Image (cartoon, rainbow over all chains, first blue to last red):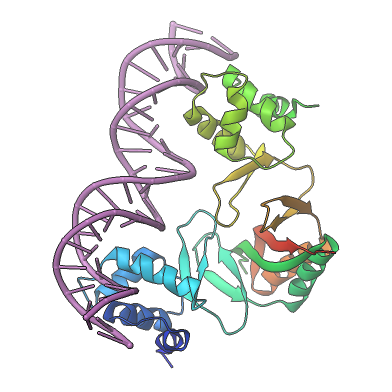
Length: 136
Length: 136
DNA sequence: ATAATTGCAAATGCTTTGCTTGTGA
DNA sequence: TCACAAGCAAAGCATTTGCAATTAT
């Protein structure tokens, strides 16, 4: 189960190299949203000669194959997560940077309706909430 | 009316230079979402020695003063628009790049609710729809 | 007068790329 | 075997910054 990215690569005919396997493994295990630098750090613990260029190339490859998802939250470098089984959006804690995933079908539906009403087919969307924790 | 950014600068105590006045004028007149390069081009027609660094600095200054809004749509450089009277979100035509503004109170409300439910106060948000035109 | 702003070019930070060597199917 | 991938360093691109000269108040 922790190797699902590697399996998806096989399914999609993405050639597997040692480096890609490592990156796949690390990303499969990650429950957060690391950026390329962080991924490189994590992968380097398993293979200290892997190049950051390879991480960039691999992450892009995976993204284009629909195997991982890329996010550009406000004011940060790009972050990645394994492609989720079901779609979700993100709430970012503006104080800690913590990222919380959420799903809201009503919003999803309304988005589609808005697009329709404007004469468009909704192809993609981006919804990010930025908030600060309610102190109690 | 086309000089409202200049007026806002005065209100907010932003020092006005010739360059800033020009940029304010151009942005006040613009009904689209130009990037810095485009702004520089437009401003250069009025003053051909204005530096792009000044445009970058000014646009940042205006943004921090809440006078203009900055957007980082997917895959593009930052774009700017004059700060809107009432909040709106954007639908981006993935074929033409055209940007359509829209308002949807239901979505706004749901966003707030989602944040609350997660224990957060909603401070900011980003909602972008990417779509392709329905051919008729 | 003088603190802030400009223009220029150099620096930055993230990401991509050219090229040579190495390698998976 | 051989098209493709990796590593390295260099290049790219948008944006920022240091500094000397200029300007707004």
